Length: 370
Ligand SMILES: *Cc1c(COP(=O)(O)O)cnc(C)c1O
Image (tube, rainbow, N blue to C red):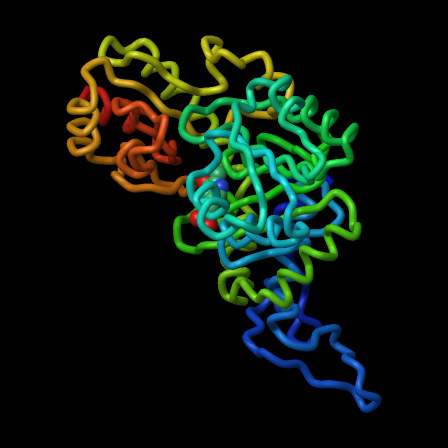
């Protein structure tokens, strides 16, 4: 089946009692046992498994072409489960522009348990040189935040395979409609489902998808079940509901982002635009090779510096000044002030999550303030 059909049908388990066309929300924490002590419904206790979570995991595994998925209460909990599944003393190679929430998680929560190097992932040779005896995991994120830098998934997968390392990709910025890391050789994909998968800025969630049901995946499943950072049935229902329109929403995000990037690139007040779909993007050729579409995120620099950037976000009427991404509404953010003083993000940079409003209205709003 094609992705539009998978998105609508793969996560919908019909209720055999009522024959409701849409799967109900199963709030029960516990499930009745059979006479011999077995579990005829297939469920035991809601931390271990729940019908709505199973549906969410099933549809996302199908969207990413994976063997299985594990859903979590947030994207950070999903990422943390990968790190917790590693043996103590393991070394991780991560990008120097890794999502700051996960970078801080490694530095604050895994200090003394795991070791890590944060390096430039556009430099494949450097990744290769950073591998040591204790290295167990390469963690990539592409396109990256907020400079929309890409890393070559297939090339890193090749290195990981040669050195028997686990290769995980944070695919949140792209969505499964724009990029399929498992097909390019990754072992594990992560999403913050808070973003495009749910798509309506009203649930937090995270998910991991595996290519193979192997021993490391079993560790992750143990972290999910015994660690217990699982999403509620209602949250799973909402995310599964959001996913039904994901392929069509992504088409709109991509079309609007490309049009907005073209507009900004030709605007005299703008110094630079970062969007993988622009021919001027330094890795546009790589984007063409590994992405199915260029996503809905872009960043741009203002010629008149930080002051102008702050004025622009305050004066816009349709764009909401807020963090996060992937919802139907357009968001704009001064990233430097979110990320703190150790960031490499330029002070005159604005990051945009391009929403699904009409492109003419978005451009008119920007035209009025630029
Ligand atoms: C938001 C985000 C996360 C973290 O997800 P939460 O749901 O906020 O915990 C991880 N990676 C990327 C790229 C994100 O945008």
